[in-house]
Image (cartoon, rainbow, N blue to C red; front, side):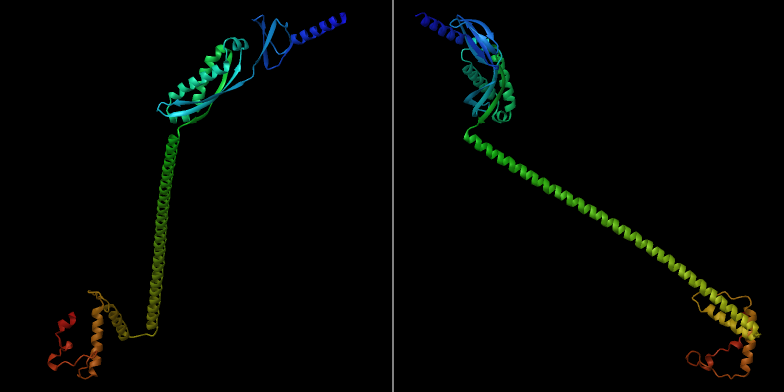
Length: 343
């Protein structure tokens, strides 16, 4: 009998010991209540409590996520959209989290839905669709301020979806297609404009280059022609110089030959007349007669008289001209002496 009592006592002591030893994990905190009243908060590790007197409630301090169910929200431009979000939070004070709110998950879900409805309702549809970051930031600030007394810190809020009605989606798609068509048209027009500008610039540069080429060609032609004129002038000058020198040398040689041949006055007179014939054969309207021409005429008269002594009075035509009548003949030698001298 005593052994049975001892065994029962041992079993009770073991059960009490098991109930008294509690292990708190690193990410947990333990709230100890003694006879229904808050006693203290236990840290992670080995903890002992009094069974049947103390109770230990474990609070998870890790970051948690709450899925906010989709709800219908009317935007400022009277479009009904379906919005859902997720809220990330973590406990900062396990005592307030347990004693200040009865159902924290329900409370934060309803709070998120209410504030989300208010924020989306103040925005137009286009603004709401393009301002998710702004909505997330504002909703997080509102929730964090409201849940601070619950011992919770809202880490972030993410809008998962904003679904407009089907007809609005179709209109948005049509608007998007029209906008893309407009951009394509504008891009194509800009491409045509840039191509036309490029072609015009190319034609302009080609015209400038062609004009420059023509200018350079004209300059080169002018320079070539000027050089050719200079060369021709030099050649003419050299030819005239050489011709003059040759004529001078020829005349000099002829005169030297006449002088060496001891030609008489008649030969010199004939040479002088030949020179006068060449002088008078030009196109000049005035002829300058040397002063020695009087002496030459006297010599010519003497030669004529010598020739006429052995000649007849027969008239000989010149250069195929008809023979004049005797009444029309004029004897130059019969002219008065003063006229002959003047001539």
